[in-house]
Image (cartoon, rainbow, N blue to C red):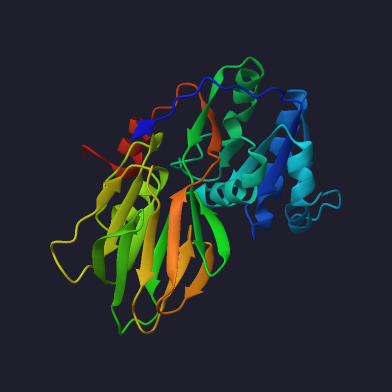
Length: 289
């Protein structure tokens, strides 16, 4: 395992591409405030097409064009919106700034009212870019990337799932239970945490394999280095479903496999320079209370 600290800065901060939380037309007023803050900072903005349509604007651009024209992307919503933006922009490698609507998020740490002051710091290189590991999976000739986790789950609530797990082609475990979570360190505070998995510092490069309600009490979460390719062979007669970041679902039949390895590109998140991950954990998980 290793951690990745970066002194990376944006080559340019002249153009931002904005994506709003889906199915939330009520964010229009907040978007207008955000747009005004960018204008005052002399940063041009473009709005993604579906976001523009949602709030009644007619000047949106398709997501591919947004990525090609932008120096960085801005996600306006919660952690789920940011995860979606990161995954959709994966091939472009653009840093993403998360503006949070509501309380503090694990990934989105800028509130709308804090944006003007933060943009001043952005223009003066007083920020940081965190490089977060992503994982790449393949099954049935389909490939996908995950920011938080890939979950292999049973198809029927009345049946348990049996999965054989291999590391670099060699069997190391057979799991029998409700399913498996293969998580990134960033995703360690998501489903992995609720299933009893460990919290892992988000800039670490590691796989976390956590069984969900295993039939045997000897099955425990496992943290693995990213040098390996992990393969999960579904032996259950009903097959399984693969859920990527809680957003995409794929069906897997009996005797088919899911191969997982570290993605070649990392997610880049723009944060306040003073942001402290352990303070976020303390607030979100109420440690010490």
